[in-house]
Length: 402
Image 1 (tube, rainbow, N blue to C red):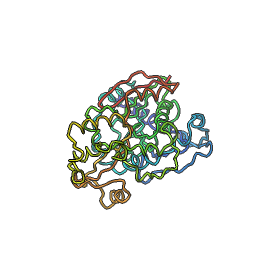
Image 2 (image 1 turned 90 degrees about the horizontal axis):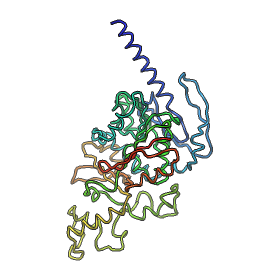
Image 3 (image 1 turned 45 degrees about the vertical axis):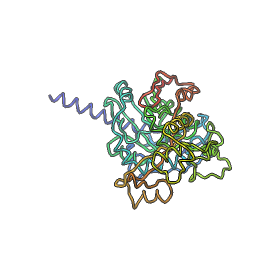
Image 4 (image 1 turned 90 degrees about the vertical axis):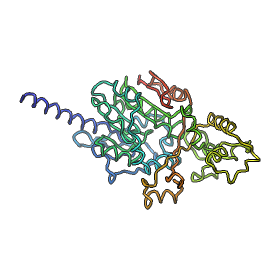
């Protein structure tokens, strides 16, 4: 009996030492990486805001396991060939992704508890003792799913990271295109419903490259993204396609986001309306207004619209659009009317919907078409696709580092 207790205590002590070692040795501070760490458990008062510029290669000091300081050059950043502007966050992501999730974090977390069977199956298939990196962990619903593995998560939203920390997960605030993990550190990595929030193709490719970089050779990476081909087609009618005027504000979607001399400001990004179509007699906006009973400003005798025509228009435009604002309804009783919500109303980040009794926040999404993920991966020489599938309105791939 005594031997059993001694053995158990020794095993537990070894587990704790390994746990702390993993936490400390995982981090590789690289330029413009926003992190806040207390054994990777973030406290709101310790949140770090980064304002570094990419003017020159940087040598950084990182603490070793004993607390000493080791200065090392971050070769993975310097040699990545990644343009600094690719790692710099575009304004549309700052406003319609980062700020929105910061505002809705508690309510968002309360709705995120069900585990997708495919993701759970992937995590449960990993060997005991595997180190799993979750980039964009949200409220941490997948952290600890397989109790025989070690988990380290990160997310761009400090409030979501704080929720994870409150659940005793190892987490940090970090950007998906600029992961603060050492090269070849993890045995596996996951990115669940994250890449569709990145607004340029180069940033999406960079995020995939980062996932591959941080896993060991032979390590697996699972990526899931929202699909254009939604199982529930009616969802598309509730999303707002971004007008082509928005696309023109960037030089090209496939290169770093360099601003044109456009008169269109981020605060007034146009949504799809009659001015975005040559045929102004019948548009998806008109169809949405009719479906919402907003008919006071529409002369139905002139446009002669019916349900079948609207369905055809919505289906046609859904096939040609990938950039959307997707609404999040934050109930009034969950909103801080005198605090963040009041500020969101003043700045235009949110609007009131008294009919639904909610504050409405728009989230930016780039929804993926079939084979788009595969195309992005095709240029990454040290990764191969070992599985690909469609699941619950998501396109999914599993990569292996080679």
